[in-house]
Length: 114
Image (cartoon, rainbow, N blue to C red; front, side, top):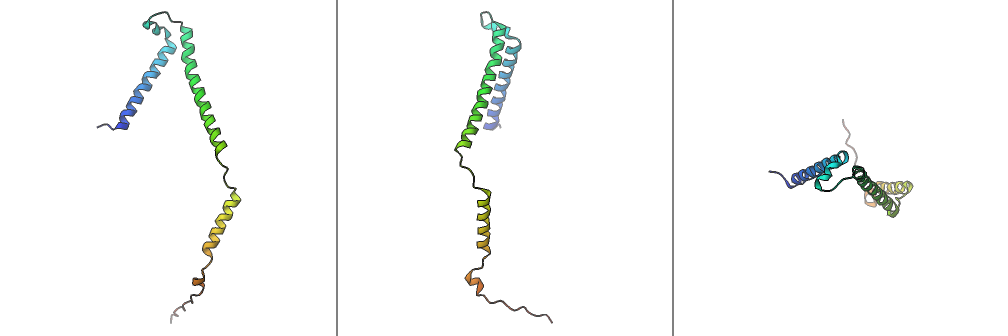
């Protein structure tokens, strides 16, 4: 039995394969588009087959760059390392200081071995 994720993965694989084949055939043999009727200007088709993916990739890269810039501009700066280390030192000092109850406990004498 195939899971839902495997089905979606198979569909994505087939769609990508069909688009890649369509792209390559159109790029190197643009005359096949004449099957749909009318004359085809091969140079014009090849230009657009290259221009559209380049445009989409450019816009995607610019969008990612804008997102990174926006995230950096709106994120508050981290605390300085000196402040973090002083907080850690203060916490460790508080943990090591004995409490009043611990100070009043008498020490037991060790048994001497004969």
